Length: 143
Image (cartoon, rainbow, N blue to C red; front, side, top):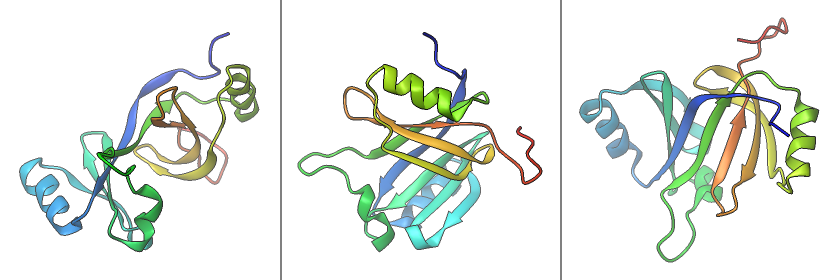
């Protein structure tokens, strides 16, 4: 059975860094990115890369403790976020359960398209994937 959504592109990629000033200088000056959302309590800054976000998460900041890469040659990417069409949250839960995929976390937060619902899962290789629905607004519309 097909998933209850259609992928529409990459919303954001989260890179683990250990020097925020140096990272921001590189992404602004070298890559031409623009400032995005800021989450100082998490040690996280987002930069716009076209219509997608690159999230810089400082693993030396207390808020970055959960982002630490695995020991001994760990990874530098925390997760990839797939932007999707609107979907029914319960249908997604059922779809994932049918395929034996556990939801590790559900959240409502910002991304390249605005504030929306996210479901975090892991692929068979341990890579974290965020499935992110479209932006939702206080009046109930989605974009």
